Amino acid sequence: MAEGQSREASAYGRRTGVCRHCGALVGAGEPRCMMCGGAVAPPAAERARGERTDPETLRFLRAVISRPATFTFVFIVANVFVYFLMWLSGGAQDQVLLAYGAKRNDLIQAGQWWRFVAPIFLHVHLPGLGPLHLLANMYGLFMLGPFVEKLYGSAKFVVFWVLTGVAGVAASYLTVRPALAHGAVGQFLFKAFDTPSAGASGALFGLVGVLFVFGLKYRHELPEGLKRAFGTGMLPTILINLFIGYVARGFIDNAAHLGGLVSGMALALAVGYKRPGARGTVPLAWHSLQAACLALVALSFLMVARHFDAPPPRLKNIPNRVKTLGRSPVAAFVEAVNDGRNALVRFEQGDAAALAPAAEKLEKTPALSEQADALRDDLKALVLRARDIADDKTLQPRDRERRTQQVAEDFKSWNERFDQLVETEGDDLGIKMQKSEQPPDEKK
Image 1 (cartoon, rainbow, N blue to C red):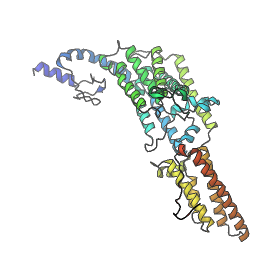
Image 2 (image 1 turned 45 degrees about the vertical axis):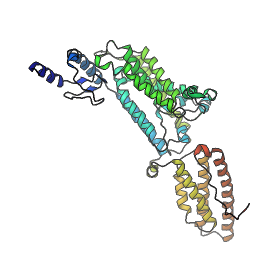
Image 3 (image 1 turned 60 degrees about the vertical axis):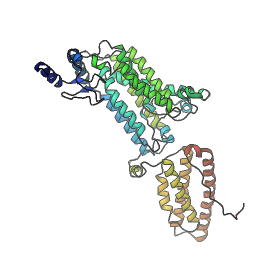
Image 4 (image 1 turned 90 degrees about the horizontal axis):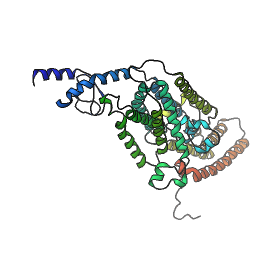
């Protein structure tokens, strides 16, 4: 290599640059991009052009990167905090999800408008996968949020996040159409059942839509190295996620994703961004819209608190929740109910030793559904009544026998109600009645 070329390559290697393959920022002296693995140094034929655009790219990046991304991290913390509260209430199952404001059409039609807003900050606890839904969405927000917030500013970012999230929930609301949920396309767009829905995916797709339109709308003023990161560079992300939604139709709320994506595109078409080097204050109208969106979120969760009907989150629940990490709440519920029933059977036979442990386990059982939880509480009350009878040494034999008989009759009635629950809701809850096999010579 000639001396001039060597110096040129050395100088190039000392500069911070942008990967020509994926648009990621590459540190000084790095031979390859940490994101895609592509070689940093361009071919000799392109080096001169790269040298000319490099200062422009650096100026653009420095101007944008120096801006704050405060609300990206505020929203991440808010989502994690709400998930933690739900975890303390028994886990993100249907009853808890609905208590915290998840979308369900019949409840919205009954006047609970806040279910258009609260779901943006709720996430489902997936059986066997735990907080994967939360982690995936928060990773997406961490990767996309700073780009949008730094390009448009915090006020516009808050408006984008809330409005596209609400648009996603509204799209989910409008597409509960059992008559149309047939065939591959119908199942992709429409839902046959009005089940609880929650998640920040609609708002995340909104950010994808914003960046897609941003790259196309301002392609003539973007530095060469960034044109691949936005605009058409977002197409693989969009197409891959739509394909995943198509494969997992019936499980993923594709309507919410599309509602967020389209609304994000529409907002980006109408709204300008803060160009590098631009000075001046953000118009009062955007600050007003930002305040209105934040007030809407706060009011929605105030309404959630006023109508809350799930076990309240308590810090004392942490040890028990830690013990049940990775376990299905259905399994824990069934185990606690079986322990309570067995303890009452043993009590009728004169053995009260299992009553206190059974009552404690029933107290800590995670929530499943309104009817299931009511039966659990009734069983716990029966176990506590039996324990009180066993512990009361002042009872006369006749009174003890009478009260024991009353517990047995109430327990029989409870068993009939529980069998009815299994028959009507068992498939939805994942509970099945296990019948004991009869001996071959026994007939009924």
